[in-house]
Amino acid sequence: MRRILSPYPVSEAEYFERVLRYDPNSLTQLIAATSAELPAVRDLTDRGLGLYTPWALLDAALVSLALGRDGRPHATSPDLRQILDLYLALDDPVTRAPEGMERWNDYLQRTLHLQGPWQEDDYSQLSRSIALLEQTPYPDDSDDPLEVVLPGWDHKLLGCSLADYIGIANLVWACATNDPNLRRRGRFTLDRYPVEEYDQFDGLRTPAQAKAVLNRHFVTTKTKLRAAFPTNSDPLLRRYTRNPLRSRPLVGGIPGGYVVPVPAAVLGKATPLGLYYTGGDNNSEWGKAFTRDVGRLFERYVGRQLALIPDAEVHPEIVVKLSKNQSKKTIDFFVVFPDLVLLVEVKSTRPSEKLRLGGEDFPTKLAKHFERVLE
Image (cartoon, rainbow, N blue to C red):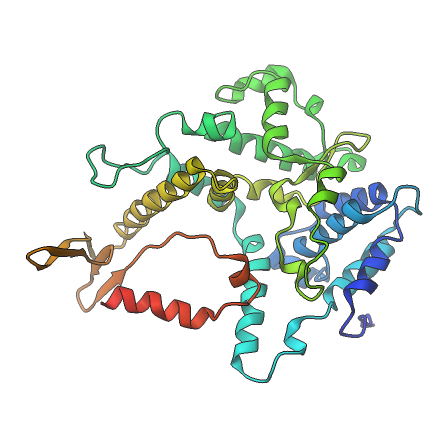
């Protein structure tokens, strides 16, 4: 028998009302326990779990923790299903936009930026962090030298080595999703990890050192979430805006240890994209330099991957002299096959919130980048 979904569209006020019926500690712990049992996003629909997407679960947790009131009734699994059902039916600007392709371009931009990062292979991305930031050679005599991604950069930014940072993220995820005690799924406490096993880390040797890294980068509280909640955002777009639980996926101050509403968000912190945002998030001069360095390394990383293509020659950019006083660099790589030449221009940039929300003309913006490549 097919389940009847909530009629579309649902207002954000109705969705909020449903979420806020329940005690935030109860609902968030239910979300965490449920998330810990879920398969990869690509398998949700085939298993009849299409409502239980990580972005929907994380949004419900945010609304509850930021706006909820303690002492309300405890939430049950059917209650959570109803909340996620309403989330799926939330109204969208696409219902009000004029007919035409532009409204669908905007909708696809919003959907891509909201859902895309959740559908990557986590372990491939964690490995890529090491490959990009630790194993990509960069010449010391380059005319465009690295500014801050130099020996010791990871300790300055993360408070530990990059390998240990990835290890902590993996440890939290593993404990939250695979604890033999089902009642502890979706939670994490450092006392579950024996002190004698800290020798598996590069430099972390005590729970206090691990806790310092967690508090610095992973942990938030209800008070902080309440302060960060976007109270003045467009109700049709709020769910597409930045969720602070994405950058701080552990919730402290709740009895029983850290609650991990969506464990997959913990792994996301240690991916190249997560590190890119961590390094550049404070908009400091060091942070800006970090994002520039990641762009430089990313270009060389792409070149390394292109070099693996069989039956192709890869040539880097060259400087073309246009006049006596003017010269210009070409595109980044020429990949020469027996029957064609592929031009590759590598760009690394953070999309603005306006772009993520579908407020910019993305096709035109993309076309301008192609024009620069072909100049």
